[in-house]
Amino acid sequence: MTRLLRRAGVGCAAVLLLITALMTQSAPQFQTTALAVQDASRERAVVEQYCVTCHNQRLASGGLRLDDLDLARIGDHAEVGEKIVRKLRAGVMPPPDVKRPDAATYDFLAKSLEKRLDVAAAAKPTFTPPGPHRLNRREYANAIHDLLGLEVDPAGFLPVDDTSDGFDNIAGALNTSPALVESYVSAAAKISRLALGHEMATVQKTYLTPSDFSQTKQEEG
Image (cartoon, rainbow, N blue to C red; front, side, top):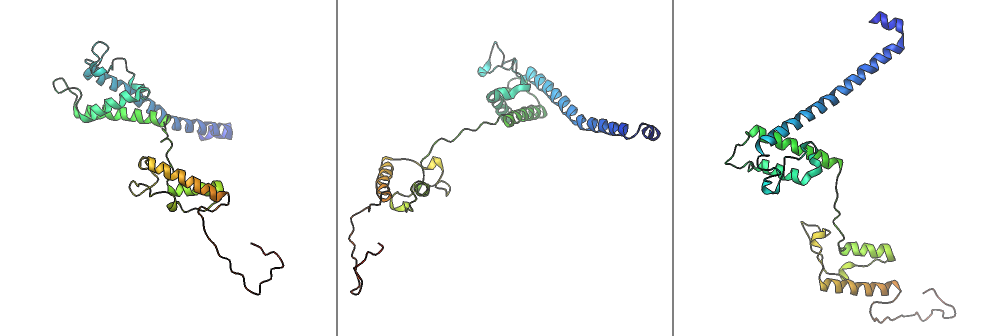
């Protein structure tokens, strides 16, 4: 081999190294695919033996049909897959009065389906937004500062927020009541007067001018 490489030059050696590297990298992928196909066949065999006798097109026990369910694409039917896994993990299916698989078969089918469901969920993640929720007092004060440039003390306008596990910004804990809405309306009215340069309440101020203070020119303020 060494003499051949010397005669062929560095180019052939590089090609051989490249082919070897590709074969080394591709081997695990082929093995993974083969194992996936093997698992899918075993899953179908277990379901056909223990489940399809009841969960088929004719009987549809529990409103579930498994005779035409593609287990290899269980991620497309995640709700059904999760239901099957729960029943397997609880050991309630098949029913006690019929033939049941051993513990190893239970574990294999549950783990295999869980793996497929996890892979499908990771490939197409779904995020359900929590929806709008009201601001707590500090968030309200920060919003006023960002919008109007005013520093306000929210404790002087709004009641204390409910907390959940020590946090007062959890959407589920920030309930809204008629009294709270009135507090927000009142706070908006007072803060809008501040924004326009008006006082929030009638006040009296006394200005004392020193006797030697010059009144012949205007002073700042």
